[in-house]
Length: 132
Image (cartoon, rainbow, N blue to C red; front, side, top):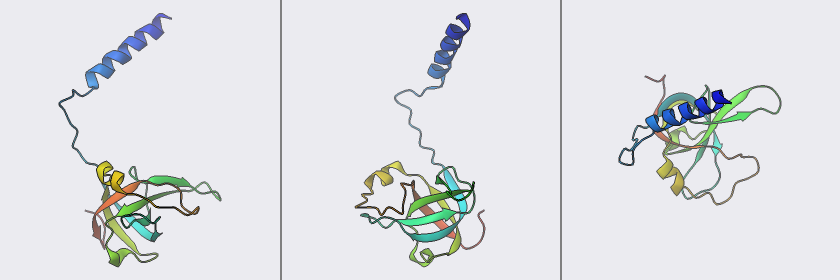
């Protein structure tokens, strides 16, 4: 019992020591540069969303488990993907980020059953060759 109380107190001390004050704001934005392939348009919305599959693991994308195997795919709905890369099976490298403010402004009108809910990412840049 004493161990539990000690651990609880230690947890609270660590939690309070690592918390931010009200005046601090975290402005660091996490970017990833990933190989991707355009799949199709995502659900109709007030902004163009492109459904892409990333060709390597991504912390920013949604993971999707295959029903046929143990494989996992990383997918996202992407804002600001240039038109020239919105061609089925087009492979490219993309620098993406999460933007909660921008994401909250996207209003999806309806979504077909073939799509699951995925993270919305913002395309910062598209490269024909590898990421820097």
